[in-house]
Amino acid sequence: EAHLVESGGGFVKPGGSLGLSCAASGFALSNVWMNWVRQVPGKGLEWVARIISKAGGGATDYAAPVKGRFTISRDDSKNTLYLQMNSLQSEDTAVYYCATSVTAPGAFDYWGQGTLVTVSS
Amino acid sequence: DIVMTQTPLSSPVTLGQPASISCRSSQSLGHSNENTYLSWLQQRPGQPPRLLIYKISNRFSGVPDRFSGSGAGTDFTLKISRVEAEDVGVYYCMQATQIPYTFGQGTKLEIK
Image 1 (cartoon, rainbow over the protein chains, first blue to last red):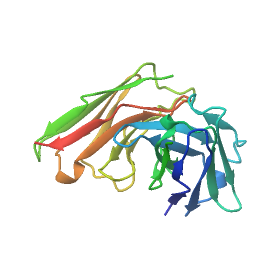
Image 2 (tube, one colour; image 1 turned 30 degrees about the vertical axis):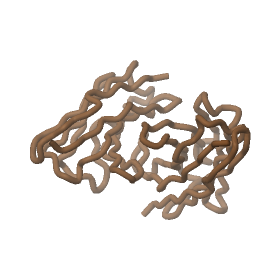
Image 3 (cartoon, rainbow over the protein chains, first blue to last red; image 1 turned 90 degrees about the horizontal axis):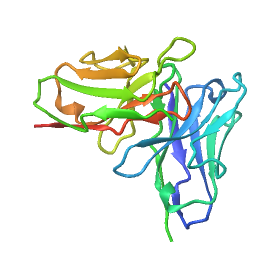
Image 4 (cartoon, rainbow over the protein chains, first blue to last red; image 1 turned 45 degrees about the horizontal axis):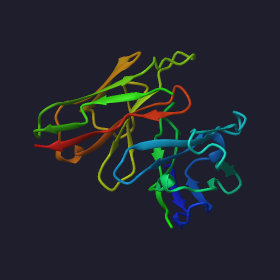
């Protein structure tokens, strides 16, 4: 069965950088479209970024609030997804989930447990 | 961006009774490939979201058949035929027809 495990969250000062990882098992990362979704504690879900499968060309897309600051990437040899976050702001404080569509087209059928990023001085 | 609007935002329900959540999108969710990428997610307290329904009405693996989805175009509904205690949580609709993917605000289901 598909399984996702995020890591890399923590405390960072405004203007700082942080890198998140999402280790996948049970499926090949290169074959699926992968996403990052975030959630401010106690609030709703916000899509952050997407990377298309290798066969699909590997293009990336970003939500407007993070475009130019965040970079989604993956290492297929490690079956791991990444999110590099630069110029972090307090508004980026959230739990970050990686999520994918393995068997359910156009839906996020597998989610990690999430990793908390706190941006504060 | 496609705006997803859920109603109600809070739904107190008696155990064993039905529940219904509505989701309206600001534009049609029909994709050029003739699919409609509207899904429903459940988030229990302290847990990541869990997929319940995809492409409007398809139940994901392991989801009880008391959950059902319906709708078309811009109006969609999630129904729970008989609410059980384990159904407490927040329910989100989500569209993946157009980037940026967007979610509804969430509907909190609680037991009366």
